[in-house]
Length: 365
Ligand code: NAI
Ligand code: MG
Image 1 (tube, helix red, strand yellow):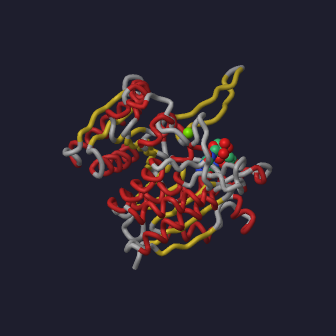
Image 2: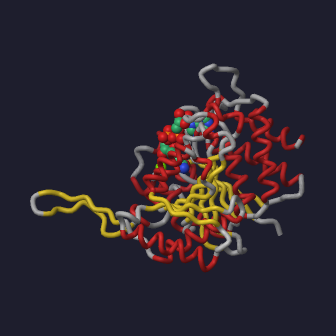
Image 3: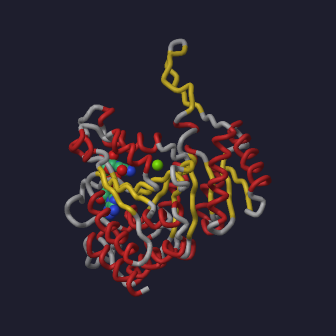
């Protein structure tokens, strides 16, 4: 049987960009790489359809699928809903139930967009790095947390907490990832001032020495890491870091490469029912209500997210390379959605024209 994909297009531009991903999936099916595709609602669309941002039946489908492709959730229409019914709750519940502990955020600079970066062309041209952010523990989850009263004033408390096993599983993901790429991992924490950082460094080193001695490992304090990311990002291959530092470092790295409309992501967990890791792939951007329904959205982030599924869920590296080459070709040909037009302007193409151009490029490559 073919591996299965569950598509959750969501809200706003989610369904628009996902329509282009469907074209790509159909192209691959015609060329020997087929998936069993099913579809359901998430977020506001699920609230409209089922009265909840993530129905139990949808969650069960996600648990049974080999990979989930998600568009985006949210929109002004849902802003006044109770907290528990908000579209974002559906997404967070999915991540939590699937226990997606490794968040992969590539920062990849397509040659034709090198001038789009906040940095100089020579610093970013050819850039291809991957940040692995631990996603289910650390500062955003540790207990105790809360706002408490202490004497005559209040105190806000969050706890940066990591167990050895939480660090170890994130480290294993990073080393496995590195083996498929440049074989280098740089682990970032603050072992100089944080005990959780000391443990992080120790455990990462031990997993390396015992299980992945072939991968080159270095350690860096996260503040220096932030500097190095903007000074000389090409020194990195895989950056392994925790939830809090990863949140910040991955956003900074994203801006090395230009538009939000270009950025894919993956979130991976332990092995699912068929041996593939539990996985969800989604663009970094949101539902973009300001341009929804106008055919303006850039579908590339969502298309590259499917490319990450090919590579990281199904070990179809050659097929993923082909998709990236097709994206590179349309950009090199000068085709641009509106978000990719610089100050010098130009004529934008629509969401579906971009999808069609990528299909045409796949045909010629
Ligand atoms: P956003 O990412 O939706 O939009 C930010 C800006 O980038 C907007 O000007 C938008 O037009 C532009 N943009 C985003 N994606 C684009 C694309 N593919 N092509 C061209 N331009 C693009 O973030 P914003 O405006 O903060 O949030 C809008 C809604 O999306 C909110 O309801 C928010 O909660 C939700 N959201 C959902 C996320 C998700 O589903 N993972 C992530 C971030 C926000
Ligand atoms: Mg962030």
